[in-house]
Amino acid sequence: MARTSVKVWAPATVANVAVGYDILGFAIDGPGDEILLKRGTSKGLKIVEITGAKGKLPLDPMKNTAGVAAIKLLESLGAEDEPLEMSIRKKMPFGSGLGSSAASAVGGVFAVNELLKTGLSKREILRFAVEGEKVADGAWHADNVAPSLLGGMTFIRDNETLDVHKIYVPKGIQIVVIYPEVEVLTKDSRAVLSDSIQLNQHILQSGNLGGFIIGMYNSDFELIKRSLNDVIIEPQRAALIPSFSKMKEAALSHGALGFSISGAGPSMFAFCNNTYVAEKIVGSAEQIYGDQKIKVKTFQSGINNEGAFLF
Image (cartoon, rainbow, N blue to C red; front, top):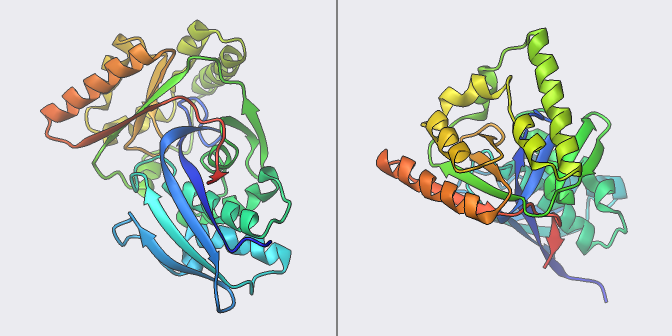
């Protein structure tokens, strides 16, 4: 019997991962987007409800990342007139640097794929999710979309062709995401970046990226710690986030393997090798931002290896 409705979950993500600007990302447990899709009565896809976004997201499916991703898949199937009704439930901080628009895009296309039982794999629908994400920032990149859909940590050798690979994650890795509730606009976060870098920066960053990946595959936490150091993007963006340096110093002093900005910010992440270290960092975040009367949310989890799923 054909399904009449589906409910799917698409997780939040951390992109860039310090040393992999636009090419590294991983999914986390906890926050994310819930998409409900059901068969409608009039032709075409309609977004009938959005909750949790404080009215900031459009119901027009051609202006919404979830809608565009879903429609691109429907067009490829010749099913753009399929009567469908979508509800989007945002269950993650909006504009936080945790891949909110990407999670919507992933949820939208994954829901259509499941409801219509297309038989397409997650990798085969990845390009439609990227099409949706492009609506949000105008760029074709999958560093949030790929891990939200596929799960785990993903490395993108080339965004244009979506040459995406999953990276082995050692046992014990714990992530702390710290979200101070301040506004950092993506356009401002990108505007501060220089179009050029020095040769020595490129050499050092390339070494750090390679060292990080080798450290992950070999479960070499000391190599990960030496490598998880962004010498290009983070120094340019750090001033946009209140108390970034103080928070980083605290995280590293507690034993974090690395600490940097999640996506465009203002969220930050700590990369840890056990829950004890993670819990100490959560405590420091609450104290540092509490002292400044800045509201802060923290999320502690392993790396989510499942990605988008039906439930």
